[in-house]
Image (cartoon, rainbow, N blue to C red; front, top):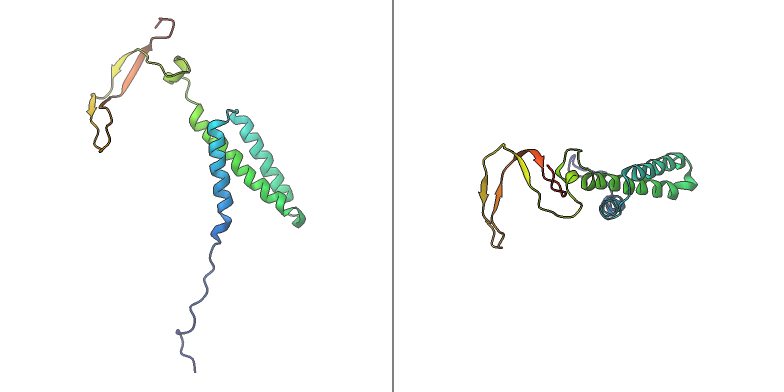
Amino acid sequence: MPQVGFDEPPQRRRTPRERLVPVAVMMVLGIIAGRYVHLPIGLWLTLGVIAIVVSMITFWREELYLLMICGVLSAIFFISSAWCSLVYYYVPGNHIVSFTSTGGVLCTLRGRLITLPRYQRSRTIYYIPAKTFFLLHPDAIKRTDGKW
């Protein structure tokens, strides 16, 4: 007579992790595309919505399963591209970048300090030049034509 509780452990249902690999790959590729391919966010989002609509239409047809999977993966790609493009390339209207040229430039600011300046040295084994950090509330920015 078998003893109760000493049988084989119950088989728990496991989530197949290999199904998440294509999702992660498409998200990484979308982030890379959003960073290096300069397209408007509206285009990225429009393509993402089209891919979602295609996936929803083909969801109920078993013979169109591959098209539905491609639609879901492409929607993940396009939406992650839109997110990355939004993070990297869009700033508020009063951001300092909107008042300077597109390249890296030094600019002259007028304003008042919000925090005290803090001097920070490198604490790693690698040499990093010392930096001064502070928050500034700018009142004016000197433009490239010399006007404030």
